Length: 283
Image (spheres, rainbow, N blue to C red):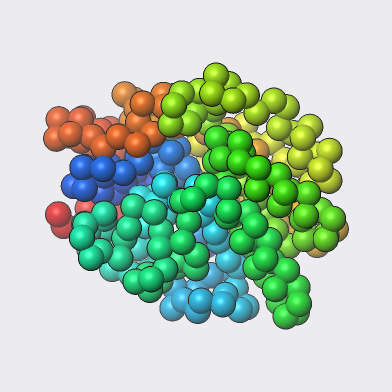
């Protein structure tokens, strides 16, 4: 378990990895990846009980599912630095025959990935299934899942949101990346999400609101609080407010970097704002 200073150092390196992966591939999704860096760092290096030796069924360990699979660069960096596969492999992101596909996939057997994701709306359903399987198997570990706020415009999300409280799936912690942005613009303009806390509460969820989703201490505290709320008959959702592109000034707070890779000049400018703490992977 890492302390806050160590987590911040890891997060800085992860952000560098995100920028370099997307630049080398000349494609990818840096905006949401940068915005969720604190969440992933806290989850894998402080919160979850997980084993990099990796068993697909996840028996006896916490499990994580990424529903908004397009932010794979942050997850790949976290998995590599957690020991699931060599950090050097990050240089193959989105390359032909790479295990690091643009959206996480299972056919190449990449450790840490249990389901292909990126077809938005499906991850919550998968996570609920995994959580129910743990209950059936007498496994007291938890299941975590991350969704995007634009993803909440998918109908399958709300079918799953009805299912989980009805079946008392209380070993499940859902986090929504509530950054207010999606590929075509602000969610408020594309399709307003309305009063999210009230909606989840009406569906029977234990609702938490994390206002500072890019503050490492706040993220760790919220995830620990969520863990303490498990096992009490309700699934838990953390509505986590983040800023898309956080950590790189010209990428912050705009949908324009949702799916746009930085060029050489932009990459240099971004990396100048991010401390190299664990060592960059070789290009």
